[in-house]
Image (cartoon, rainbow, N blue to C red; front, side):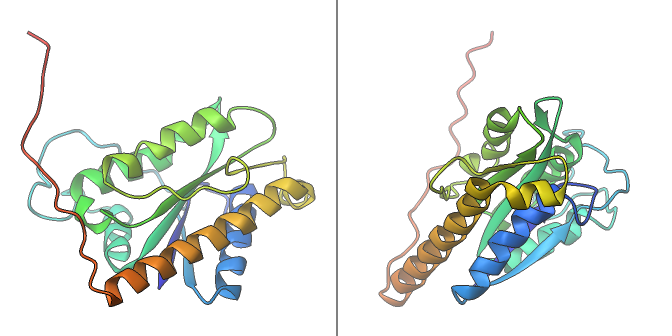
Length: 207
């Protein structure tokens, strides 16, 4: 079992990373492997809705980041999407990446559990959680919760470490994720199949 943690911050060792590292450490203690995928600081182009990715399983704009992430997603069993808050909203770069990844590589994510995590100095965390949760909830991915909303606060990593409830929330999140993954594994071993999904209906009320 492996959890892919996406760090949507351009700062590799910042506040978002600190939260994700707490999740990774607890997953390890629970016997679950993990990897933190760093989004980096290079520009990420947004999705243009061209449809060129249809049937390909990858974005036609091969910028050595989105398609690498899709490939790693295909091998992962679960995800945590983490992002800092910019102007009461998740930073735009993680949204560009996830827009393209979910359009082009949706099958790499479907039915796999996912959690979303945000970090902020003060406000905007709940709005950002709502935005990030839109991705897993359109791809039939069970959302993993914790003992509080999945957020940490602080202007620097040391501040985040002092956020005792935030760190507690990250650890509980990891334990819940590990528990869910073990339940999924037990279900597979018992012969439980994934649910059949209906596709094709596209209601459009705009005339």
